[in-house]
Amino acid sequence: MVLLELNAVGDEYPSAEITGIDLSPIQPSWVPPNVNFIVDDAESEWVNPPNSLDCIHLRHMALTIKDMPRLLEQAYKALKPGGWIELQDFLYITHSDDGSKPDDYKYDEFVRLLREGFLKFGFDLHGQQKNEGMVKDAGFVNVDNKMYKVPIGTWPENQGLKKAGLYNQAIILDFFSAVMAPFTRGLGWSTEQVEVFLIDIRKSIYNTNIHAYYTLHMVIGQKPLDAA
Image 1 (cartoon, rainbow, N blue to C red):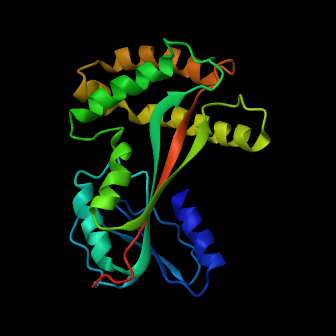
Image 2 (cartoon, rainbow, N blue to C red):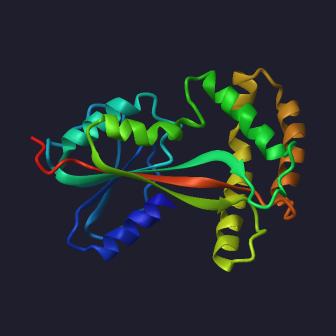
């Protein structure tokens, strides 16, 4: 999805030069002429010259970056004075505005155990809560944290939110196939235990009587105009 959106940004801003990076060679073969993709590790030493970039966008990286302060330090150096950074991450803490989410909501149990498993490897599923503070600590100004509700499932009446909930539901269900490591290697569960456990979790995701959502956090910050 991010790769496709970079292509869309390239089409909308043809005068901009856009580079996307990823650990895996999964980039599309067709891209606009002003978009290119490279295989790289954002936690490695950046090769971008100081004061060379106008905007840096990071999405869903709070869980995968072990040293975010160092990454932000490198981003700060690479940005031009006045340039912007944006971090987009889900905060997987569910809410319900109408009290329809039960205290024993199974998806909450899943997230709690998933976080516990990831912590065994040094990754925090709720690490995005620190993004705003880390961006400020890195020296950025005009820092803001915009939050958007993301429904879990198709329960909203609003058609836009219903579509977002459908997409989110599909993402969650697909993600279940990738959670074996934190449960088996992190928590010591067997594969069979995980599969049985996920049965009730799937049922909770499909239950349209539970009006649950979590939030997408978009933290932005600007490198000061008078920065060296």
